[in-house]
Length: 336
Image (cartoon, rainbow, N blue to C red; front, side, top):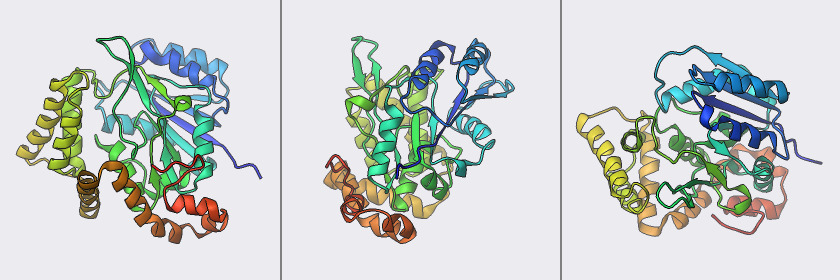
């Protein structure tokens, strides 16, 4: 029997006219179309409303939700508020998958088809994505953004609906796109992003390029990691690893200062002690063993939690598929 592939896209956007047409065109070209695509226009003041109205006439699955202009939108909490303004208009149980999709992306034509195919091959994959590439402003070459294999990326968070419900959705804070994946792992799901050519996509703005500049974006990243509960030792290693990435030294310094400044101010952290302990144990294991080995080990350790809470799913898969699921393996034979 063919698996159901009803997927929902929810896209918060504000003043995206410069990139909007490329995203709209790339979704329109998908080999498997969404059952519904909700675009939340969060008070745009540019040509975004006109472009969305044009495409709404062409795409029968496109629905526009408009919000009034409330002034400058906070990146992180503001984006997730807009996301829920769209999500709350539907019953997510009507869909097998859902995706928070940014409107500054150019996706390959089989993107969503291949993500669903991957998730069908392993019932433990709760969230997945391809990898973002962007145009380096100095060389003009297309280069990969640095993002770990253990996270689905924030600009295209593709979720199995069951997993999204179990983790309680997204928190309305800067580090929503990190907390969700770690929460999923706590519950025995696998979170991942995969760098294969057929699901690489173009990110028209690089990570951390805030509307107020990259320095502000990286400061915000530092605060987000502090809020989530990231180990300072681990975050220092991350900043060192990012030193070669544009804007080189400046970006790493901004990340560390954003973290340190938050600590010095005694800003509040994510109010879940068990989560923060889980996160730091994992991060310290990454420093000792390497992220790939530590993630694979954790996925193995958490398998019993997923198996116990999904007996119907376990009963419906073959022994080989279940073995792959429990050991972090996939249909292509890889282990991530």
